[in-house]
Length: 238
Image (cartoon, rainbow, N blue to C red):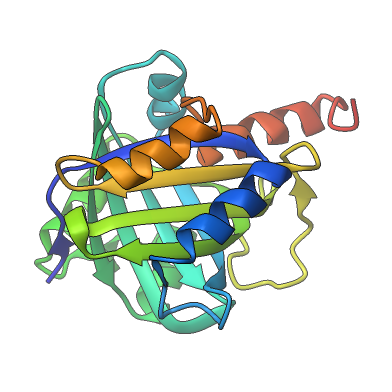
């Protein structure tokens, strides 16, 4: 069964490495590191994003469409022990993520376009089946990065810092550790995400205010797609 999460707030910030160090030292005093990470709360994420024949996920984000969704396969630390198929919905600043654990066989079938493997009765996978059949949904770009995560039980606050963001260009070789990757972010920049249920506790709001963190509309998927386009045009090193 797919695990359905309720809508949550999701705020994104593009911060300097200096502010990242300050923030992580401050929140480390009262937040717990994600138990799925190493002793520093860090782990590697590689996602393979899908889009349809119209590139709807890409253009809806650029156009600021309030209600949209995107699909991806996600693995951790280059391991096949946890493979997730996810559909992430967005309504304004609210997000909802549906996630289902799948086998490596199904994962590889999705990548190769074997849609029959999706006919399992799972609503999430059946939805992907429909999208692949009607809108030619297919894998388009690898998004690769290191995540450092902190959690707090009040309002289920989760703060993450994403570094070393890289684009796999147009490769769909999810399992290939030798897949060519190129850095997307300018040196010294970190993507911070703040997620919570209803209200952000004042202590967290004060931390962000002290550093004048400016909320931005940033998408790792869009950044990596745009970088791939620039690479094709020979503009990647500008």
